[in-house]
Image 1 (cartoon, one colour):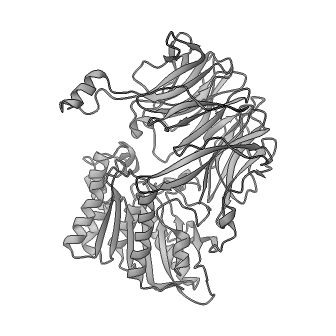
Image 2: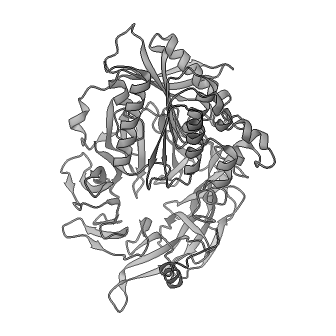
Length: 633
């Protein structure tokens, strides 16, 4: 199956760049690669621009739409390349030791700004070679820094001149050029560590010619993703609560370039706006955020009085929205539970999506199990929503095995994506083909239902959220669809935490598949790469409130477990360290509970290699089939 990973309308909206991702699996490779295509705005005359067997991604139009820049690792490192649209070969324009990250053309087309991580210095290389490469943790941090590459200025050796713009000890995350190409506003954190880019995120402005930096947003809130208005008079950015609350409120603020007094715009329904850009008349900013099981785009007036849902009435799941340079066209993908994602464009004037690709035509007409949104009431009267996928050949009146799938986060959300997609760890369509129903719940703590709902599990992991899940299972049983004696449960990350919690509190489930689980909250808090995350949810440090961490740790209830467990964990996971999976594996093994731990070499928190993802899916199918004792229907 092919995945569309970018949809980028040209500045004039007449053409569209898009990228298609495919898996490469052979004797020596297991990776995903992107290739770049261009077509007319109606989808006609599609041309493949990159044909390398290595990854080429993140294409960006030049301001005059005559060139594209993109990144590729075809030479071993992720470098910048230029490609003329009127014919010719790609030219490599950087030669970095580490990797080029995000980049943007200057509005005058004379330069490209990009982010690149620090490389090892000569002393560090020497020490590594001599096996003398000890270090003190959190000292001499390698930062992501902002550079500018001048496309028409070269040094005596013929290389394009490249200047470092952020010499300060800052980790640059995102940035935006001023319309006059003289300055860049950028968001930065304290270090590359994820927690340091949320808890300590600020905004600065740098003069491209002089390199002079000045702070423009520097409070206890997380301030990030700044974007210049098209007239250069304003900067918009995302801003959190002060202090930062994980899963808490975010707003859009705007600040005059010549002032230091920000203005807060209208709040969005879910208080999680992701800034897309400005309107062409500079009177609105555009944002996107989850809206229950879909996503929406909103227009916020800069007077702070108006919020308009641009996607009102949308019935499909919109993803990867992108606003073109002139702010008059969007590119995005649309999909639903029975139709794979394709690329679309629309005028900003009104939501009028035009399909421009048909890359999955070979699978679009294959049978897909029915999925519907269902709701139920939980113990305290809250209404909970979920997605129920029926067995492929469902017959009314027959009861089927049911798998409860729990999302991560905990502020994740299950959306109406294509159920036969090739992403994630749990093959929903394959489960349905085996004759299983699958319930994907959005319990309290999920995104898309407002901030009060999202924070309702603070200091209560495994409490009312657990009751929401069990109530959902009982609801499907009452619908006459699920066999109460054939239940399974699965989840990754927070879903792994909750799956571990479920089997420690009930023996109703005949099989469990648990991925990268948090099982001991204290050790998780002190070893993960997001310090502040658990302390925000528990509202205290573990040494000041040991009981709350202990009481809500699944490992504490392992003596109750009777359910056979398949564990999966990447050995390079730093979000939920591998030791968390090993702890519950050893505990279950000592108790003689059927358990397997699928170790995934090189894999981070979310597996990235297609061979590993395929093995996870296969192992899940085999595990549930073995212990739920259900034959194919």
